[in-house]
Image (cartoon, rainbow, N blue to C red; front, side, top):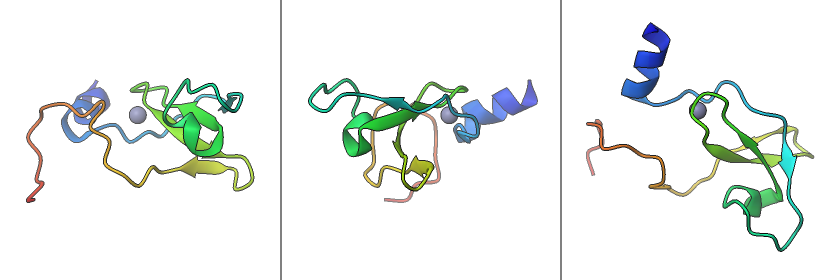
Length: 78
Ligand SMILES: [Zn+2]
């Protein structure tokens, strides 16, 4: 329970992912999938991440995505 609480407080660590899901090119089903064509879903918070089959790892989206960001207080200065 404490872990869940911390997740809600500080954000999900995204430590558990679903099996990579590959989408067909052209079907813009997910923004994460648009990066590599494959994406995984965090099993804890449900957020989607692009997945690189060649690198066999999750690709962190560089840009700030406001989606899923809750109106929690953060230490963000700017
Ligand atoms: Zn997560």
